[in-house]
Length: 173
Image 1 (spheres, rainbow, N blue to C red):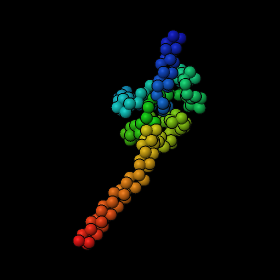
Image 2 (image 1 turned 90 degrees about the vertical axis):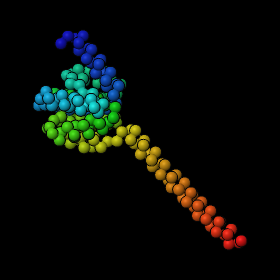
Image 3 (image 1 turned 120 degrees about the vertical axis):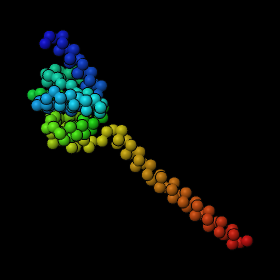
Image 4 (image 1 turned 45 degrees about the vertical axis):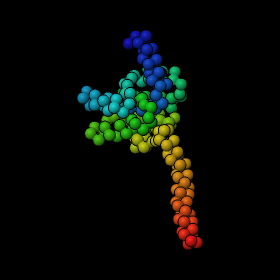
């Protein structure tokens, strides 16, 4: 491969690292062409970009990226497929679902929500990681709950007070 081609690949990978907030490093060796196509289709449906890259080029791209990926360098051995995503738990769920029928992909590690997860045993934790938007939604729901209770109590109390006042007004007549 020519130096210019390598530079283009490194630049392309660097752009992807900067664009997507989360990456999964997987081993897909052993998947045949049909299984690989099925995995790529599943990734496309979940808005996950899957790229197979040489480890040395990927590491150089990580060195040029905005985030510090130095903790991931040790995982760049053997065949590496990279899954880029905006939603931290999407590839975790996708891998779990895909492995119901296949033995691969095996998770080497993931860089999600600025945390490093190493090893295939972390797939359940990654599938259950809540995205930033999901966490914000949970916080809003928690904040709204007490307010809804107060409003509900006031509304039901108001109808009770109205009923008592109406009964008292009828008694006086």
